[in-house]
Picture: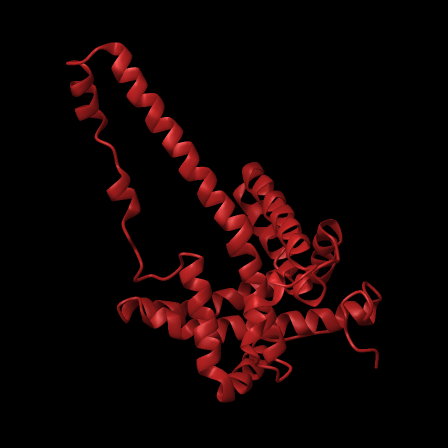
Length: 251
């Protein structure tokens, strides 16, 4: 099944005509939770920077034992903070991303219920979602360790995982990744070009004090959801999946 950027964007615009501000709120929440709001740059690197030169000078005036103890404490704190951030990404941001993608996917079908923002936190959905999102992220990370280009390619291969989990949170981590790979096969270059087509909009958003990016996100998210709907339909047609597996009504 062929698809074009023009068709996907036209469908996204049609959806947003009646639900733009809901889409804006969902996109804003995802940006805030995921730390992607341009105006929310807390300059954490600058604030957390350590003047090692000054520390070395200070350590010269105290015993080596005290200096070593301070260094150990700093390392422990850094490890704890790193683990906390990783846990937040795994157990909060990842399932919330699935929730937002579920909203946009359902919005493409005319269902703009904001309750989808709590979708994966329901009984029987959360653990499967967390496991599958972690698994796809881990695989993608390993590909990036190999080389940048394969990592980018695999990021597109795994990009349908959140949408698949929205359809069936209990599908299983390996099956979610497998199906996403199958859905995107032969489409990755078009998906890359689709993303490139939004660069102009995002540049304009950045020029508008960065806040303008937030107003582009609903358009971008809606278009990507339309893409999933098309790829899902193709997967069903090709026999890669079936309505039962994706919890879809049998026509």
